Every structure is written in structure tokens, then in C-alpha cells.
Image (cartoon, rainbow, N blue to C red; front, side, top):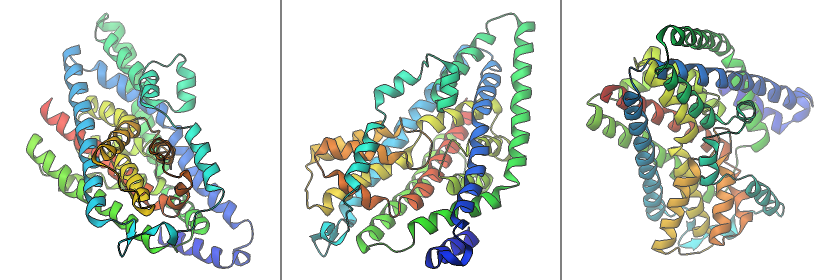
Length: 400
């Protein structure tokens, strides 16, 4: 990461030093690494969930796991949103010496067009429910609809518990073998992680640079502070109270997955590594880890919800808009709902923020200001999302 940052900074200062094609090389290295990880997501999700669910003794066990997982996701996402509202009210990063900071930030003329384009692709909560039952599984795999694939895999896994045992064992054995083989391929891909991370970081620094206005720096610090408070204080407390275990060893166990999520800014790309860490390093049973982590990659985006809520409140402050209590509740509810429908890919939350700005009547051009540090913040919140999934897996496994 340090070498990539240095290479990107040098290229930005003097593009001719490395040659004009250097940026393309950075992009290719990063894209190959991310594509290799995302290539494994679909077979890993389907095989892990089917083999895990089919190993349950009854449908009642699945019901308990599913209910507890969903309750954890909704509750922790709501907590993350409340953290954002509280910190924005206290620190007020959108104000400089009590004055709205909108005049200090440069808004590009094309930012409104970008925001409108992002808004057209924004997913709604209704779309999330529709994704549960995809009309075509192959299209769902192509589009990365992990939620639909998880739902289908749960149904198949449950059906295997209800049919003749000999036939069920044949199918379950196939998917168990596929899951183990995919894990092995994941290990091979991760051997090339340093090269891929170098390309990702170099490309990011070369394109975005390091300079930014003071209000954006304060906003970034506020978001990172909220993520740290959520991941290092609130989640450990929740795990301690509900599962009776210490969370700090889990940070060490999940380190490879957290670094992968941080580098790629994609929970889907980090899914294979996340499941491997939860099973092999955290000791969570496969029947729990495959279901919880796969579902979390689709639904549990608490870090994203925190960022979305903080971004809208920051922009409102920067424009001198004093949102009422009811409007703040709307922002919080929209952040909670849209985050659960966001795809696990980089910068997906910008689509939701564009819609939230339009709903509240705030200028859409303000979205351009968020692009300065969005990549860094995206990396941080993605790592928090993955760690929250791991905490959920530990809790569900302990209570199962």
C-alpha cells in the first residue's frame, strides 16, 4: 500500500517519469485482482450456503439462524446511523467558524450530471425485496445479485433436508466439495494480493491526489471516528453482552479479510476471504459462516449507512440548511433502508446519497465534493461492514 501510494503520487506529479501507460498498468493490476476475487463470489456463495443449510438437522434450526441474523443486521445498522447523527450534531464539519462551508468548497459544473446519472441507477428497498426471487438465476449470477442466490441456495439446502437421505448426500457432497475447492482457489488468488493492492492504491492516488479542503478533511475525520466508535466500542460491547466472548481476538482472526475489504472497497470481492477467516481462524461452523457472511455481503452495510447519513447531514450543514428533527429521522431511515439494498462494490453508496439529496431538496452538485475522499472512506466502511458480519457470525454460532 505504501509503495502504491508513492508510485501514484510520483506519477501524478510527473506523468512522463513512468510513461503515459503507467496509469493503465496500475488499473489493470488492480482490476485483475478484484475480478479474480469477484469471480469466486458466486460459486462460493451457492456452494457454502447449500452445503451449510443442508447440514442443518431441521428447518427450525435454519429459521433461528436466519431470524437472529436479520435482527442483528437491522439493529446494528440502526445503531450506526444514530452514531452518525450524533457526531454530525456535535462536531458540525459542515461549518467553519460557525459559517456554512459551502462557499469554501469547489463544486464542479458537471457534478449535477454525475449525480443525476447515479440517481438513475440507485436501488430502492422494493428492489431489494424483488431481488429475493430472481426470475433467472443465470442473470442473477451475472448481475451479482447475491441476495437472490442466497435465497435460492437456502431453499435448495432446506429441500435437501426433506428428501431421501441417500440422494441428498450425493448433492450435499457435491456442493461441499465445490466449497472446499473454491476456498483453495481463493488461497491461490490471495498469494497475488500484494501486486493487486499496489495497483489499486497507485491508481487511486494518481487519480484523486492527496489535497482537499479543510471541511472535507474534517468530514472525513468525523466519518472515520464514527466507524471506529462503532467497530471498536459498540460492536465489541454487543458481542460481549449477547455471546459472552471477547471481540479483540476476532480482529486478529479477521485481519486478512479486513485488509482485503479495505484494499478492494468491496465486500463482495472480500467474501471468499471473509468466509475462510471466519471458519478457519475464528472457529465458526461452516453451516453458520456460509449463510451469515453471504447474507451480510448483500444486506449488512452498517458502515455504508453511517457514511450515507453523515454525508447528507454534512452537505445540509455546508449549505446552511438546518434540518428539523423529522427531517433528520427521514435521513436516518433512508440511510438504513438504502444501505441494505446497496451492492457490495466500490462507491455504490454514492447512488443512494444522490437520491437522498434529491428527496430532501438539497443541490445534487454537492455530491461532487464527496468524491475527493470517497475512495478512502469507502475502504474504511467496507472493512467495518465485513467485521460486523464476522461479529454476527460469532453471536449466531454461540446462540445456535
